[in-house]
Each structure stands twice: as C-alpha cells, then as structure tokens.
Image 1 (cartoon, rainbow, N blue to C red):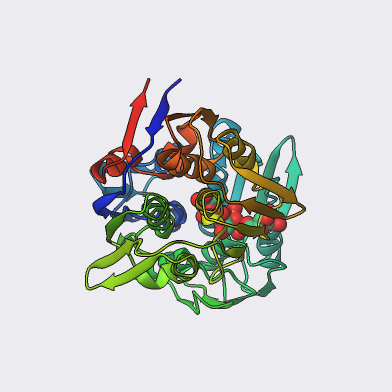
Image 2: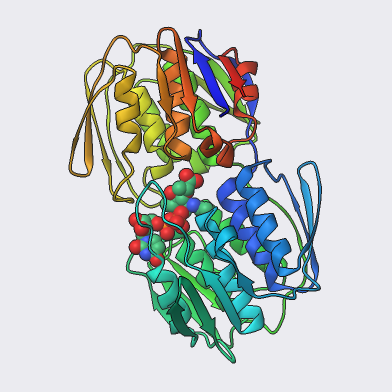
Length: 416
Ligand code: EPZ
C-alpha cells in the first residue's frame, strides 16, 4: 500500500501556490446538472474526490472533458437520475447531486451516503429541506427517492447551519416556483462560490455568506464559466506546517478574508502573518505559546483545521485545549499522534494537549483527510522518520501534497 515517508525537516522556506477549493468544486460540479447547457470550470484541483464526482456525473450522462485544471461539462444528454451505492459510498459529497437532479427532473433516487470516520453524518436536514419544497421523500433498501411534479419555494429553518444541506437546498430551490428563504444557513465561503456560479447561470441567489439566503426560482438556467476559489483549508494546512518547522513561507492564490479565524489563532500562538499584495507570508519570529480553540461553523474556527492545529499544539510549551463542536467524533487522529509521543487526553468534546519537546517518528495511519494532513505536519517535526499509511485519505483533498512540501524543503517521499 502506498505511504508517505516524512522525516524531520528544517524550517520550510519558499513559495507555495494554493489549489482550487475541494469543498467548492464539489457542489459546483453538482450544480452544473441544473442546466442542459455546457459549463466550464477553471482552477479545478487534481483530487480523488473530483474524480469521483466526475464519475458520478458521467454515470448520469454528463460529457466531461478535462484539460489540466480546466473542465468542461456538457449536461445536454442526462439519461439517468439514479445514483448507485458503489458510486455514492466513495464520497459523502455525492449526495449533493440530489438537489439539482430533483430540481431539474422532478425525481431522483440515490443510495444513502456512507458514514465516515468523523461520525454518522446524517442527511436529515437535506431531506427536510426537500420536503419543505414539496418533494415526496421515500426511504427503502438503502436508497432515498425524492419526487415532485413541481418544487415550490418555502421558508426553511436549518436546525444546524449544515454546509451540505444549505448547498443542496439552494440547488433544489434554484428552479423551484417562487421564493425560498433559508434561515440559519451555513455562511462558508464555498456557499458564496456556489451562489456566484448559479447566479452566473442566470439564477437568483441572494445573501450567500450570511445566515439568511433567498433564492428566487427561475424557469431554466444556462451554462456558465467559473473559476473556483482557493482552498482555505489547504492554505491553513501549509501555514501550520510552516509554524511547526519554524519556517518562513509565502502562500500564493489565497483569499486572506477566508483565513481570518486560522490567522487569528496562529497569531495568538505567536506566529507572524503578513498580508502581501499577492499572497500571505507566514513566519516564526518569536517563541510560540499554547492556545485554546473551539471549532464552530464559519466564521468560527474551521473544524477542517482542527487536526492540523492539534499537531502543532503537541509541541507548543504548555497546555492547549481544543473543543470540537461541529462533529461528534473528529478526534481519530489523537491516538495516531500519541504514537509519535504526543500527550493528549480526551474529555468529552475536548482534547487537552500537554506540549512535549520531542516527537519520535514511527508508523501511523491517516484515519481521515485532515487527520492525514496532521500526521504529515507532526512528521515534519518528529525525530527520525514517520510512515503515514492509508494516504488515499490525503489524496482525496490535497493536490500533490508531497511535491508542494518538498519544494518548501520538507523531507518527504511517497512510496508504493
Ligand atoms: C462539509 O461537510 C465539508 N465537506 C466538510 O469538509 C466540513 O468538515 C463540513 O462541511 C463542516 O464545515 C464538503 O464541503 C464536501 P455539515 P458536510 O453538513 O456538508 C450535522 C473536509 O475535510 N448534520 O456542515 O457534510 C453533521 O452530522 C470535509 O474537507 C446533520 O445533523 O458538513 C455534522 O455534525 C470533512 N444533519 C454537522 O452537521 C444533516 O442533514 C456539520 O455537517 C447534515 C449535517
């Protein structure tokens, strides 16, 4: 099985170009199903999850051509509105095709999404949203079916500001009759990117990025061209890698506003961050100190950066505390970090991290995408060599991560 061998590395130095955002391109690929026209997307990252979503679209009948980071999707001959288990189980985000297919074709059948390492990850809020728009939802034999002669706009309150539910409901409402208002909506930058794409198709989505989003349904949508926003979580991951190695790097293709919570917490730990005209500089100019953080829906500290920050906290002098409020089981990386010599205690939804001076490389395994990134970060600091296994998790969400890290001076190799 392929793995990544990371050895103790000196301070990371140099420039890294951030790729397009995984969590933006996935809903936008799904949204391309809202039209029978052709759409063109740029700054598409080369990720396993993008491959899976394209495979799913092709299963429906999309014709996809890819040239480097550009992708063209022709949805003129969609012949199928059912998504099988073997495709959906690969990636939870597959469920994002439900809203657009229901909206455009009036019926959709999709396998229940698989759970994953970070919790059960229900879809009740998605289904409640579709039902509020007039869809009949039936569950049976591991599949969900939704049918509606015509979706009608409605006011929907989300019990939790779910990113996926917000996205799925926006896409379902885009071709519904009348006005839909989503309250307590997710405010992530990826929601704004999706709204911008739908609006460039001729849709009417207002208020994305706030907790109240209004979607005026339209009769039909046309194809559009769109450039995907930079991946704020990849950027944050490299910021932490620079911090743990005492490095000095420049991030290119970043939107500083999307990184405010990460920037605030890294600065609190003593890391210097400078906004440049064309990027951000991250460097360590003074001794670092422990911090406490709580993950929250955007604009709070992102749960997708929790594991990476924990890796840094393992070597900050003193006690740091992380509280995970978004997912009920997102501490799978704790036991792997402890194999490297970290001192971490879990108490309910919090992890208490006692900083240590040394970590020692050994075999560990990625339990999910961000946990894998955290182990690479810890491996840059640990004495000796750390072998990170199950790196397919990492390849789902990081484009050429070992090449980008190696270019910054990291000692990292991919082995077969
Ligand atoms: C998106 O997942 C991201 N994935 C996740 O990134 C990210 O961690 C998450 O948002 C939170 O920011 C993509 O965008 C493809 P949620 P999503 O619905 O939409 C509960 C990564 O590492 N919930 O906001 O699945 C759920 O159980 C991935 O890139 C319900 O209860 O997240 C969780 O506790 C990991 N009912 C919380 O809401 C529902 O119907 C947040 O989930 C839906 C969600």
